[in-house]
Amino acid sequence: MALLKELLEQAPAMTQLRRDIHAHPELCFEEVRTADLVASKLESWGIAVHRGLGRTGVVGSIQGRDGGASGRSIGLRADMDALPMQEANSFAHASRHAGKMHACGHDGHVAMLLAAAQHLAAHRHDFEGTVHLIFQPAEEGGGGAREMIADGLFERFPMQAVFAMHNWPGMRAGSMAVGPGPVMASSNEFKIVVRGKGGHAAMPHMVADPMPVAAQLILALQTIVSRNLKPIDAGVVSVTMVHGGEATNVVPSSVELQGTVRSFTLPVLDLIEERMRELAQGLCAAHGMGCDFEFVRNYPPTINTPAEAEFARGVMLELLGQDQVLVQEPSMGAEDFAYMLQHRPGAYCFIANGDGDHRALGHGGGPCTLHNASYDFNDALIPVGASFWVRLAQRWLQPGNAEVI
Ligand SMILES: [Zn+2]
Ligand SMILES: [Zn+2]
Image (cartoon, rainbow, N blue to C red; front, side, top):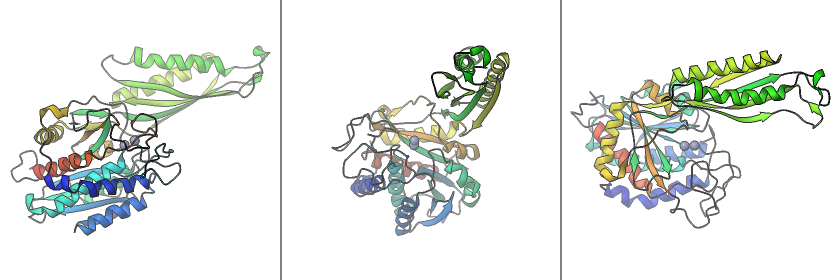
């Protein structure tokens, strides 16, 4: 491994900072303390700071030896928010706020980007152009990336490409991965209400029972992926909530189904939504029921542009060596960095969080997976991720980089 010596030396300080953020988790668009901390660190290293993008977002800009005159530019993004869940860990840096927890490692993402920022600011002679450090709020469902873009992120801070990195539990510690094309799915929600006529459960001929129709519909929805979707395309339809009925002897007047739909492409998503609507309305009509159908499209798919993914992979190879650069399967999870990739080329990269052995004494009994109450970010990643950010920026902003100009 060719990690940067200075980043290894500053790792203890960055670990302390990461643990401080972990102890003070903040939810979507409430990242005030975290944003204050980020801004004050950046300012202390002489970095120009801009606040208020996407409400609590922060952008730091570092210009290289040319004062940014070359026009080369790159954006590096870290998300800052925590999750509304109770932490099971009891070690010293466990959450001090009941019901809030950094269970997705965004505390570590902030620490890695800050460590890189400190190094880049101290070595401006190593590159030409501008590095924009994007500290984004509200990744966990709030669409903070979309809000920062709406506040002029790409107009105010012109950048030729944008990159992000997420820690990934279960991947061998010390390794990284990136690939071209879709890496995360689009995330969508639906709500279907089957409307019948309630009444006495002993007199089914006097009611219009929505229960068997809802049951048929749950099964019918499973035929979309298995029977309508091209087998080599990927899609998920999960019914995750069924609400209806209050008593054993009362037929309810309606049953509500809710769930999630995932896909990597717009045509697949269009097909799934269309078939869901047809099945819901058709089945309800066949049984004399009313039907409410709502389909909400949330995060779009996260799609890496091939040239930028290959560029990032080259930096990983240089830094970690062949054995530590892995191929990452796309995930059906979702990520709002997708919005940034709709505006600029770039890549979403993965950094291994290991299998949980790193956790301090006092961690909860559960697995160290994302969104688990026993999760903790692996601090050994900080110099790895920060070295990657630094090298990526330096290589991108090298005069003569054919990828860029
Ligand atoms: Zn998450
Ligand atoms: Zn996350």
